[in-house]
Image (cartoon, rainbow, N blue to C red):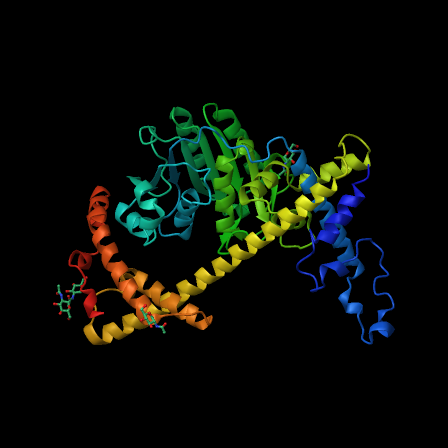
Length: 493
Ligand SMILES: *[C@@H]1O[C@H](CO)[C@@H](O)[C@H](O)[C@H]1NC(C)=O
Ligand SMILES: *[C@@H]1O[C@H](CO)[C@@H](O)[C@H](O)[C@H]1NC(C)=O
Ligand SMILES: *[C@@H]1O[C@H](CO)[C@@H](O)[C@H](O)[C@H]1NC(C)=O
Ligand SMILES: *[C@@H]1O[C@H](CO)[C@@H](O)[C@H](O)[C@H]1NC(C)=O
């Protein structure tokens, strides 16, 4: 059956699926048919060679495929019964994380995802971390943001022999959800078995999401064995197993990725030296914990760097259409490239897959509007992220310079890191002033400095009592650097 042509050409005209990495050609020049005679005879007419404004046949092919994929995704979405991702109803209030080394960035990243205000699907009021050295763990995981993001109120710690210790059934008494990280080394299988055994015995535990990283050396048989083991042991809880190669430091949502069912593998999924974004793997893992359809899934994820790969195109299209991250993860885990290929095959054999009726003009206008709005939102988000990064960088530089100056003058008995933490609000204020000045925005410096100072005074007073209470509750005296007990005399700075 034919894919709705009017839908495809509409998408092409609306720029959906316009292929970013290619030449900066205005989208209205993008050909909507697969004709390869695109360079036309423009040379004489325009007085310059316009042929490089057009696409090569390979590029055109890619655009065609990309547009087809966008059409497929929009159609799938419009036919879905549940417009939003169905979430698990039994995530509960307490999540435990195990297997994360507090000194590794993964530990704070997984906490950030679980405590993200943009992820209202996580209603956890308590996040329990298992760690061998509570002092180190607290110091590492309670950053200067913890007070403002509310993480401080949620965090709780329990001591284990190592960060990969499996909690006891007693320690899991109040836990409803569990996120665990396991290395892909020799004791991978025994770790998995212990997790499954103790989760099975802990009656409150309803959901377990397990991430195996560094699985480059893990063969297909071991992966299938792991899946079978979970399947046979888990009767009182829902599991998701995600397997990835060695981690790298790329931020999430930068690279496209592919996901395959463990049961569909016929050879080892990763090559030696292959890596995958740590942050992305944690995003996929945490979203899977919430996604109802991800229950009982054992999947492998890997980067899809080839721009022409199906996985890459699926992800590009989803991001352009405006899928939320949780929707993207849901689609990749439950349908993926396999689902798309299957649909194409079904269409070619002429069976099943009813076409959606031709979209009405209103629907088309609606899509264009949604896409435009989503583009604008994404653009604003990107700008805001960039601005915040710039500000943080400027503030850090300001604080480092200030530290050097104070150090020369007063021999401040604080490490640079501690100094920056103490002076951070001021540093951000200075950075913001500078940023706006550089942008040519109106800045009334003396007035703003006065206001800032007043606000800081008020904040200090308000925060003082509250902080004392909270810090006591968390036995923060372990954590508090000695010099903070003696208040720092800010008027010296
Ligand atoms: C996993 O397998 C199911 C059943 O064959 C299939 O529908 C789905 O698309 C597969 N998922 C992925 C990510 O390949
Ligand atoms: C600076 O701090 C260290 C340990 O934090 C302490 O041993 C030392 O006496 C302090 N020096 C001064 C001058 O306060
Ligand atoms: C800055 O604000 C103060 C107080 O509002 C005002 O007196 C002063 O004129 C302002 N300066 C400029 C340059 O606008
Ligand atoms: C803080 O430092 C200022 C200036 O050095 C000084 O006048 C003031 O008495 C100090 N305050 C305290 C509480 O030590």
